[in-house]
Image (cartoon, rainbow, N blue to C red; front, side):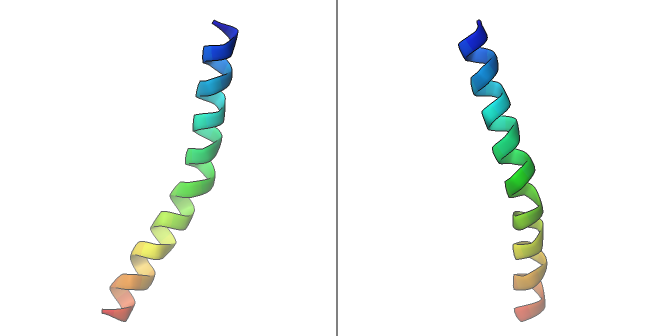
Length: 33
């Protein structure tokens, strides 16, 4: 159970770091095209 929670925490951490980057990329490509 602890290992599963740790995996979920790592996944959420990746999500928190990646979402702003994806939003930025989406706006950037929208502006370029």
